[in-house]
Length: 362
Image (cartoon, rainbow, N blue to C red):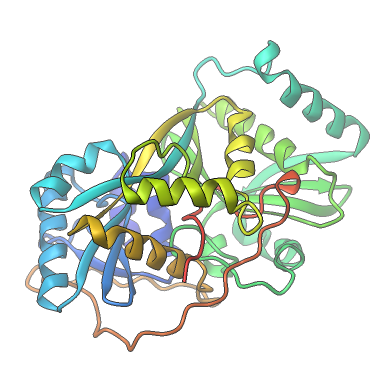
């Protein structure tokens, strides 16, 4: 698994979520590529585009869909961009936008000027008044310092999984982690999904007594650190249900949830927070065999994303020989979903880290 990830220099940062330990895998016949997926109800839901050689991408998707149908299950694909739409349509899947992803190009990035004036002022203010320091370090060296922060942030709520990382020590040990300290005490952190030229921001958490704008301060520091390392961009993750402008039933439902669901999930606050950095927005899609399947599959994505990930160190499977078409074990009996995490008020964003799959709909 790690070898496949390392060999694909053009992979999406979210491909690192393969190491979380909560997914199944479908490998290419050559064993050099894979799709990761989760099972909810009668759906097999792939997360993200295939990882591995581009020449194997369509065959991987085709074989995954065929394996799901042979098992009597519904194939679906979640959190993919425009570039995968032609392949999905060739396979007879219907795709629909379910949110917007924020990408921040770093070429020429600066805090100077009026557009990012508030970011600049808050960043300087916290650094001066709150005695905050910033560092990016291997997660393996920080897990013990991060757990109290995560436990305080969760406050007994279920952790996250599938479409974003939860607090899994073995997973965090694989990642670089950005931390903000006040004195010697960690008050906020963000796990980074690193590729050769990009960072993705995954798990973000802070202490209840941290300064009010500490997450904004942390993300500014992450962006500046990435720029100084010569990286191309920082991926800020998904704003669920944002940017839905159509008149079809899923768009109308999504807009209603986006407009009136702030009490349960900070949709507007999440997008507004990311918009402060003036990123480039691009749609992310969900695909399923029929249009009428899409609301159900989106709800199943929410269920998968609020199931706690394993807390032990993940041990991803080794690619199988070419003969088997899928590495998936027999399907378990459906389990009831965990209760959704309760978001904090938008003014204390993030109630859910960047990369969120959206609300947990039962």
